[in-house]
Image (cartoon, rainbow, N blue to C red; front, top):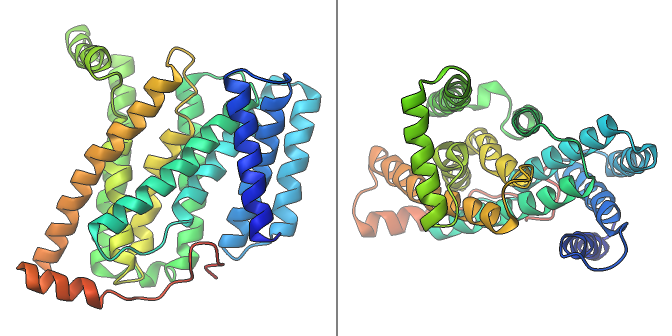
Length: 318
């Protein structure tokens, strides 16, 4: 598929989804936009990662059409969660190496934009959602797919290196600890602790309009920013970027909660981005300090030398 046509279909699908959310136009705009976005995202992900877009694009189209025509809640929910996972992984894979912090911030914004479009497409299928399950399944599928793809892009496990192994281990621990703590708190947390945490959330929602997504703030955005920074220097940066789905997947499922408005969901993603970039900046500065790059002149020289080549944004990585 020519790139211009791909872009046009993404824009048309997104426009249809926006019209359905307003709402303006025929009732079928929502599901039509969802099918279009799911198809072109699956095509784009396959093309970007050296797969077979001629297989996965039509397959996504058939699955989307079958789910809509069946009007079966299980199939519609499956199409929605699959679309969110594809959008989350594509958001990470579409990034390019970034020599400096501003470049890393740009890549995070682009990745989250793909996640946001995926969120609209997922809801466009009108699935029957149990919020926590939908988010966990979407994150699990996205993370599993990202690891499989990064295994190829990062030259397998032997390409991780000692530093990469430490980073992947820390990222895995943070991911597991965040999910486990949230689930344990939801199921077994004391009333006082839960009420205090909910009080912080309510204060943030009342005064700031939203509360940042913890997993995206603490892990997803910092990992994506640092991973793009690292990819400009070392190939194992891809292993760090894999944890970027902890940012793009929550963005792709941000509209799963019907009690949260579109404005609040958008602000939540934006706050996660801002705070996460601060943490990512700290990681980058720590990495530069540990590698002996101290002082502005040394950092500028190191950044200018960070020229590890990768295919451009819309070219196949493999």
